[in-house]
Length: 242
Image (cartoon, rainbow, N blue to C red):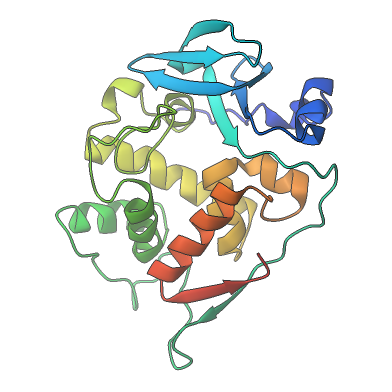
């Protein structure tokens, strides 16, 4: 049985490099590696199975994409921003609340070519197929061959290192069944970490679970906040407090 490896990010939070990165006013990207190192770079780009990092001084290096655990955009200038508490309300006041776990009586097969596959994978891992479908729409718009500049791949836009944590090799990430299996397993795991808190679950999927723990809520990254708002809108929810 594949054993989940906990993210290496907690031990980085006290790292001087990370502390400096969070205090620096200039925009950059923090590249968190699977060996525990953090690199603050001016630019990050994935090209196939390699990642190209450009230092702020202008130098460049390349790394295997498997060494990259996470890439975080838009670090903030404030050293300790207040925790963000998101409150969700239905756009339609008569709408029923959306269950985050799979409930047979209300679960529906999502529309689209992968609806049945999403439904079955979500049921197997006890995740709402509605939430999975909304996340896929935000991540890849249903494109199984989607690949981001940071190297995230497939329907659920998984980094190879994250996919490996949940049992899928990078070579399989363009296979919708394999991608869904790893992505929904990760989503289910996040639901265990942040029970009944969709905003934190989505923020963790985007920025990493330990970033959410570090800030005590949704981190103050523009990309992450927009991501949460976009998925809430797809689900017919509005979110305040961001």
